Every structure is written in C-alpha cells, then in structure tokens.
View 1 (tube, rainbow, N blue to C red):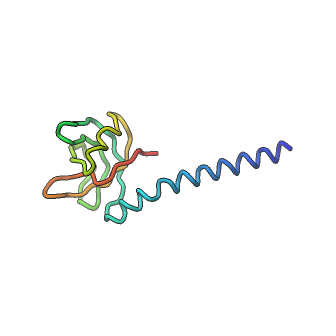
View 2 (cartoon, helix red, strand yellow):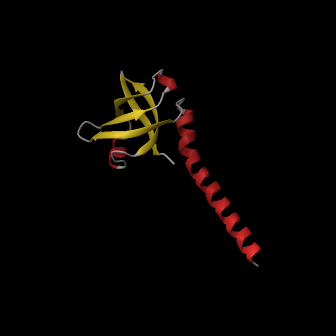
View 3 (tube, rainbow, N blue to C red):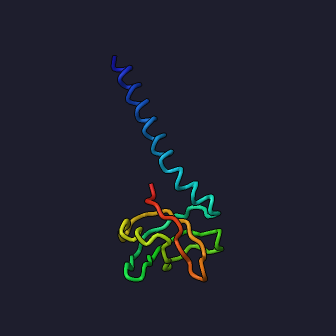
Length: 109
C-alpha cells in the first residue's frame, strides 16, 4: 500500500513539473519567434516615470551585446509594476529606433 502511495505521489509530482514547463513554453516561443533568445538578468533598479529598468544581464547575442549592467526601455510599460529590485528575470531585448528595449520579460525559475 505504501508503495502505491509513493508511486502515485511521484506520478503527481512528475505531472506537475511537466505542466509547469509547458506553461512557460508559449512565452519562450514568442521570444524565439522574434529572433531573440532569453537572457538571464537581475533587476537592479526601476524607473517608473521614465518607463525604464536597470538590469544586470548576461550576453544578448541577437544585438551583439556582452554581459553588463545598463538601462533598458520596456515594450510593455505595465511590466514595470510586475517586478521589484533584486528579482531574477529572463529577458529578450532588441534595438528599436536606436534604443535598447526589453521586448519580453519573465520571472526566472
């Protein structure tokens, strides 16, 4: 009986982790379709009035940028209220009209 309960618990755990991975897939696919891979970053500061965020990020290959800390505009300004200083995130970024812009941002797992 214990073995059956253990197997059932493992099955539920496995299903939950698969569901979690699938739930993240659409946003990652959207970033991939735009030609931008997701890059790990940390929110250093947020500037709501300017609609910008200061990120410490890894390399961003699609715009030829190495790892550094810099300010980015956000395609979706509502995202500024979603994150706080110190949050670990994953981003996709691009250059739009001469400005570096985060086109996608999600909480890192």
